[in-house]
Length: 243
Image (tube, rainbow, N blue to C red; front, side, top):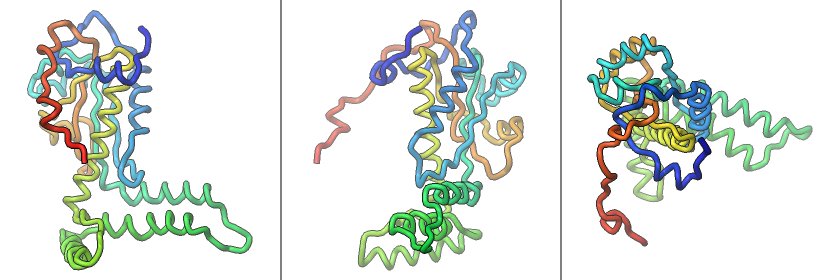
C-alpha cells in the first residue's frame, strides 16, 4: 500500500463507521501517525495535549458503551483518545524556556538579542498572565484591563480561563486532524467521535481531573458500507469570501 500525497489523503479521508475485521492495522504505523500529529501547529507552541493509543481489546470493549455503541467504536481495531492538558501550562512553558536556553546560550558580555529577550519574556510573563487564574477572579480583572486597553489599541482579548480552554481545544483539534490525514495517507481509516461519556472514559484511562477529552478517534480499514454515502458539502461559494 503506497503512501498518498496530501491532496490524495484529504480526498480519501472519510468518517468511517464500519471497519473490516479481516484487515488488521499496524500498531507501529498508527503510532507514527500520532507522532506526526504532535507536529501540528498549536497556540504558543504550548503543546497542551496528550494522546492515548488504545490497542488493548479489553479496554476498547470498555470504551464501546461509553461511545454509545456507535458502529465506529464497535468495529474499531484501535482507538486514539486526544486529550487537552491545559493544567500542564506551567510545565510546557518551562519546557519552552529550557529549549530557548539551548537556542540562546549565555553570552560573555551577558547581553541578550531583542529576539531572545522577547521570546523568553513571552514564556516568563505573557503566558503566566493569560493562563493564571483563581476561581475566575483574576480572569475577570484581566478582562477589564484588556477591555480598557483595547479602547486605545489592538490587543489580544481572549485571556479568561474559558477563553484559554477554547484555545487549548482548538490546538488539540488541529493535532487530531493531522493524525487523521496521516492515517489516510497510509491507507488507514478513522472516525472522530465526539459523542462519548467523557467522565467515564477519563476514569478508565486513569486521567487526572485536569485532563479533558477532545475527541476519541476510532481506527481501522473501511468496509464499503462503512462510508455512509457520498460526501456532502454546502456550495463552496456560500462559505468562501475573497477580501
